[in-house]
Length: 178
Image (cartoon, rainbow, N blue to C red; front, top):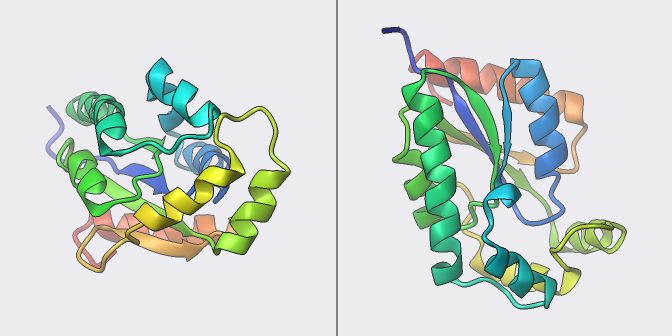
């Protein structure tokens, strides 16, 4: 069994249209780890609810978060890294994910509401509708100082974000400040 530090499992978090999937793909490629798309874990009832324009509540999110946490736990037990996309809007949601493995680290893509609305208005083929953004911002609890991770401006260039993230993850894995 490998006794070195657990590989980082990076959870890319933020509201819809903040760039989680795009940043997740780029970061997974750069770190040479698999990408786990959190939306793939939504039960059919959640997708139907969001497609109908209804916001999810904590009860709807619980089985979804448990499924993502199982994936994180399996990845962690295999001593592998991964990039996971998940809105992780509330601290208690992040606590569930963080408890799943020792190497869980968060990248919060902070985005102002006006930009999020503009981005989502131009997006096609996704079940998350613009009218649900208000509920996401209402639920959002930004990453706190005592949580392992980094907050970045989602409007910054991807190269700048990736560089900052790689440096912060390296510090996290070696026990330094994230």
